[in-house]
Amino acid sequence: MTSIESRSPQAPKDVVVRVPDTTPATVAVAADGARAAAIGWARVPANARAAALHACAEAVANAAGELTDLVVREVGKPCGEAGAEIARGVAILRYFAQQALYPVGEVYPPFDGVSLLHTRRRPHGVVGLITPWNFPVAIPLWKAAPALAFGNAVLLKPAPQSSAVALRLAELFAGALPDGVLTVLTGLGGTGEAIVDTADAVSFTGSVAAGRAVAQRAVGRGIPVQCEMGGQNAAIVLPDADQAAAATAIAAAAMGYAGQKCTATSRVIVVGDPGPFAERLAAAVESLPMGDPADPATVVGPLIESRPREAIQDAVRRATAGGARVLTGGSLPDGDGWFQPATVLADVPAGDDLRTEEYFGPVCVVIPAESADAAVRVANEVRYGLVAAIHTRNLGSALTLSNQLDVGMVKVNAPTTGVDFHAPFGGEKESSYGPREQGTAARDFYTRTVTVTLTP
Image 1 (cartoon, rainbow, N blue to C red):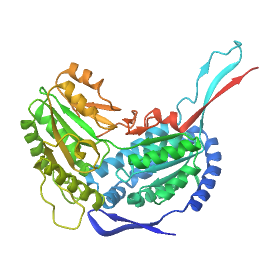
Image 2: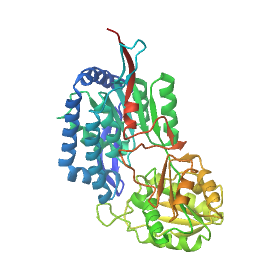
Image 3: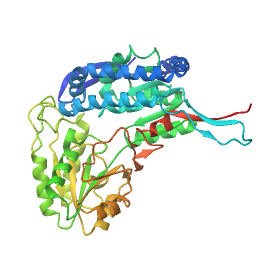
Image 4: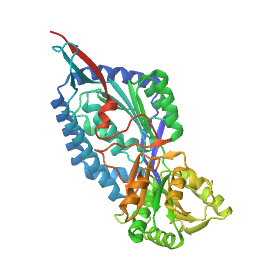
């Protein structure tokens, strides 16, 4: 069996783990085991499933320091953000442990006035989860926790770059969950395809191209599927905004964790003269420390691999050749890590890739707009629709623009990054396919409704 290496992005010679590229035959065996385990797990009382998830939460909390270090080492997430992600993972497990005790159906008026007409929520059986590397704890858990809470078994395929974190989570959960209820299958695209071909429902987070392929494959089988994909997110700055606060929020949202979040800000649309705000934003970006993610001061760590760095540098060269100006870009730090300076550009031509495509790195562009309406048109002109931010002191402007933006989430006077796990998460257009994730919306995806008529 072919093996895969996961390397530390800040020290590429450091091989964190070698794992197998799981074959379709092995996936089929694991799916059979999961399906058998799912039957028994679905019959476990809800309070016992809740207790198991609480035990998983406790295991993660007790290993928080170790997991934080592993996340820093394997995916290069700055340690402050990594620690916060572990805490978020604990909270997600506890939240969905309680959801296991939520009502499982509704009662309706019967046709004859005496029968019991009601619905019951039942698990699908085996749920396949295909997750990215950038949130190696939070995303697998916000998918796996509700799936498990409602009685499903899980096949989890992490991104190859976060294999070690996923395997460690499975080890931590082993004492709380029955055998076969949660199985981690490492591998490349073929492993994911095999999971889609065997699971009873699939949840995916990753690129648009991969998400489309997953959705088409799942729809071809007639199974439920949800796909969270890319973002090219805009922050609109109105003339009445708190300029300093807006610059600070946007700088963090665009460049934190080297911009490697689907919710990162890529476009800053300034209504009116963009010059003064662009200078303020560039200064805020320059104040963000770049370097070793293990250093508590670091905000901008390395990119996960060399390819996205090369893509960003090529895009910046093309944009500047077309007349764009680099307001700040810095220089590469010493060492072998895959670092990319946080870069802000102005005067980027309309239609340029930096204004339309997701580069998943620390780069953003400043775009002028004549009016708030024009700013909305610019924000909506891309094929993505995940999240947008509005910076203003005017409540009317905030309400009006939030109803005009073609996105799944709107932030007012806040970064585009950061989501609440108890609220629905998802986007529009090519950012998402299928139902929302997280919060009470998760139950709708990880269960099916059965209508029951009981006549005496």
